[in-house]
Image 1 (cartoon, one colour):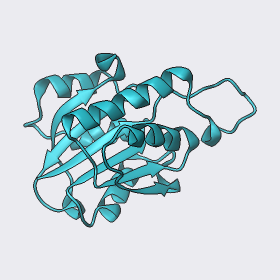
Image 2 (cartoon, rainbow, N blue to C red):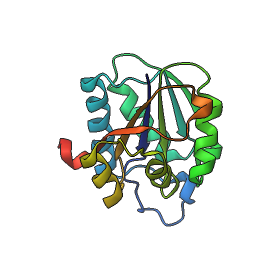
Image 3 (cartoon, rainbow, N blue to C red):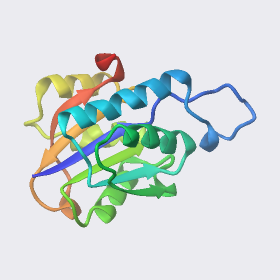
Image 4 (cartoon, rainbow, N blue to C red):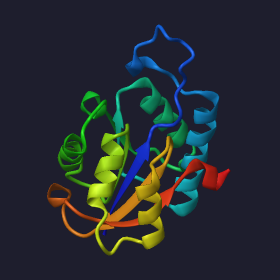
Length: 169
């Protein structure tokens, strides 16, 4: 069984209006949320073999804080293509990056990440997780999917969990 973890970057700062969107760092709330999500991944043993991370600063910082909480450090690939990507573009990156390994974590942005999560959620998904995902996908939210088969054929998966940082605080 394969596991796909979709993690929206943590809350970013708008404190410096001169920064390009790509270069915005995490806000204080985002720093805390990223650590919480990392601890939760470790506690649940949802450990990725590979992390595919948007190259935007807030995504890289989210990953750095999440990874610091994990017992082992998976391979990581930073991808410019995940910045401002559509659901189809993210799925394409997943299919290309995941030739091996049973667990992949993607750290990216809305609306593409939320759109992809909603598209992937199969009818047999957990009802509570599905309802929550349909509600919204806030910063540092995590959607966990499981499926059989190869990454290259991923088009639908069972959504098992949709966690928000405020659930863990």
